[in-house]
Length: 134
Image 1 (cartoon, rainbow, N blue to C red):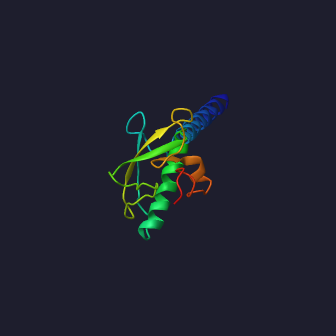
Image 2: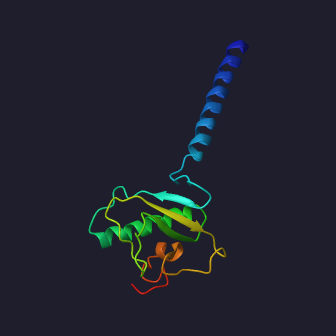
């Protein structure tokens, strides 16, 4: 009888340890895209539709979310070349993948025509995020 109880508790411990490992691995899985380099991240335009204006705004919001997810405050669209105009408007067609460079607070002087404030964009303020009137 004691031998059977010992086997049952051993199986329970093994099952418990297996569940604990599965939970630990699940906690490690997250949707944050890996960085390509120290400051570079690709942001997918997959699933973004609409005209160029709406798609560009949706991509800026997505880029802001990715920037903040990685612990940065500001970002600049670096690829494709010419994707941002002088006023900070994103000019890529829907579905385009863009590459951004990211910066922490204090590493740059603040938003400008090409440098976007991810916190402002995530807060819904697309018009003031680059420091330019759009």
